[in-house]
Length: 177
Image 1 (cartoon, rainbow, N blue to C red):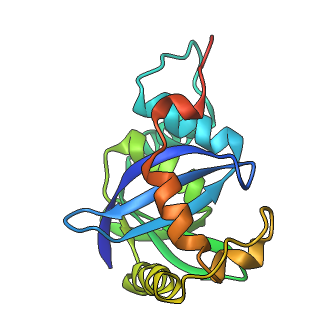
Image 2: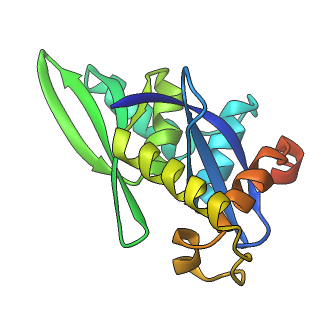
């Protein structure tokens, strides 16, 4: 497992969805994960310190862990199957360890609130890095937008990498209460 941090959070206009980019803590490899709007808003709100009058879902999850005298020790993005990423939340309560299956987007939103580390499987970072290198060598055209399978082919990953590097927090949008 490799410790990662949230490198960027933004809107992917080409895919018309949101993306969180995880980057290895002491390196350059990245892992983009496309996520839903509610999870993206929750992550962004927490990262930017946007106050809420009432607890949101991910705040509630943190409160439940604390109320049960538990501790979220880490989140691990474990694998991808058919374009779906999987994660685990590792918790400890009364000296006993628990592993809870979770969507990476929810797990990331919760782990941010609990100030615990995020990890990704080495193979996920290696696979994405290899895909980007293959595309750079091939010099292929960018596949049409919206084609999920295209995320694994052609120059799409390198173009995506360039696109994600240019995203600003403002690209994500504004929040109002």
